[in-house]
Image 1 (cartoon, rainbow, N blue to C red):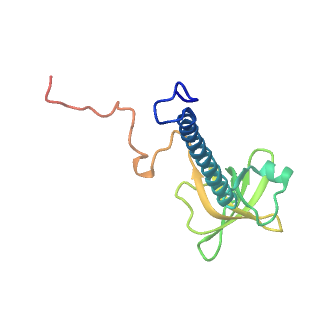
Image 2 (cartoon, rainbow, N blue to C red):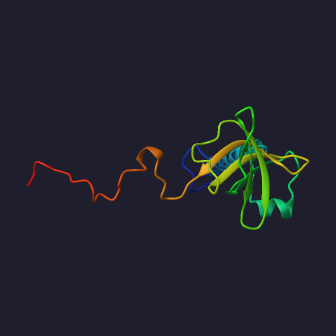
Length: 169
C-alpha cells in the first residue's frame, strides 16, 4: 500500500482531480471567450451604426435643442396648408412642417410621394443648413388609418352595396 489509499492501482488521486479541474478550466475559458466575442461584436456594431443613426425631431424640438448644421436628423410633423411651392425644375419642393407650436422650412429635391399633400403628416430624413432650413434627402408621407387609394375612392367599402351570390343556399 502506498501513500494514496483511495486511488486506483497505478494512479495518483491528484491526477484525477487535476483532470477534473482542467475540464472545468477549459469550460470557463470557453465561456469567457464567448462573452468577450459577443461583447466585442456588440461594440463593433454600435460603433458602425453610430454614424447612421438619425434622431427624430419635431419643429418644436429643433427650435429648443437646435441640432448642429449638417447633423443627420429625422423631422416629423404636418405639412402647413398653403406652404407647398414647386420649383421651376419640377423636382424641387419647398414647404413648411409644423407641429402646432413651431414651424420648420423644408427643401426637398426629388419626386414626392403620392400622399404628400398640404395638411398631411410627413417624415423627412435630412440635415439642417446654417441658415436653419431643413434639406430633406428622403420624404415619407404619412396617412391615417382611414386611407383609401385614389383608385378606390368612389367604391363603397361597407358592403351595403355589394351582394354576393354563392352556390350554397
